[in-house]
Length: 407
Image (cartoon, rainbow, N blue to C red; front, side):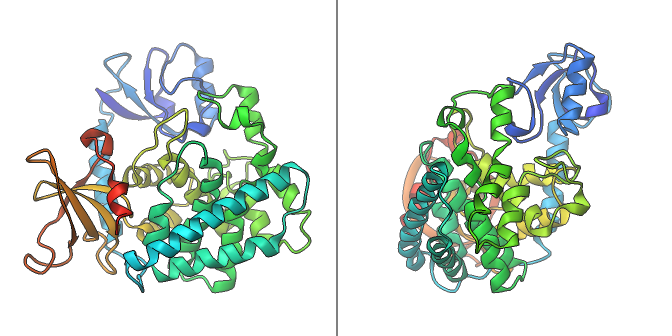
């Protein structure tokens, strides 16, 4: 049985099933571990890990600890309550209309980040006059229809992850700022910080960035230098402002002081750096990498919400949930009718009833003619169904993003 326990309850002889954190936040070569010494327990705690999941069939038990099902049920109820408080961002043009423009913006931004990283590796200053127009294009696309570019950026391959991750963080941060009511100038500076936040990774050897397996402690140390290295690179650009510098330097800080490079406590981490930390981890854990399979966007949101008790601002995580929806664009969902669908657009006032594109019947286990369904509408008017759960594409062996991008 899998149970959730606090780090103070860990004892020698327990089997850690899941460290309950982003893979970069724990120092072990394996994601599962039989606890063999007090030193290992101290190492877990010192890594800023507060709660773990144990497998009681493989090691010692903790009486009265919640099972993974109980913890998940309680978490889902909290998230559903949050979803009812505030609507998501409004789309001003249709998904189909914005997708063509969004594809061009994605490609242009990808090429720009590749150039920026190349220049940084050569010791050149970042040319902000080339970067700012791309941030403006991303912002305008988000204002027209946030789902188009956010959905397309869910599609990454392992080879271009480093570049598209920066584009994703920029896009998510712009959407987050906009949904939080921030003004255009602040949103633009935040987007610039999002696009440039990983510039320091230009100085990390490719064999470390793309290593197909867990990193050694020495390799982790190299990775953890990238916020400071990126900050130093951006300082070479005279026109750079404080917000992009702050986001670049502090997007790996954590509210409990366990982050890096400065181990800042909550009170010293700016609001935008807190927001950047959330979107950075969200995009990272949803992406497929050579060393781990990304989780679904819906599951990632639930993990980030779970971690927000310690690592992130709980209020900002709740705001982010409302920004992208509890079923983000691109999420595979199972409907009450037994059909599978991909979420294409959140509803303006009801995050439980987004627009979806159905494409598969679980009853007949076959693909069906794709159809757009607005879950906020009653039967006979393009709706008449509801979401039962978010699903894993691997479970059903389908690729929902193929049907998203055909709009």
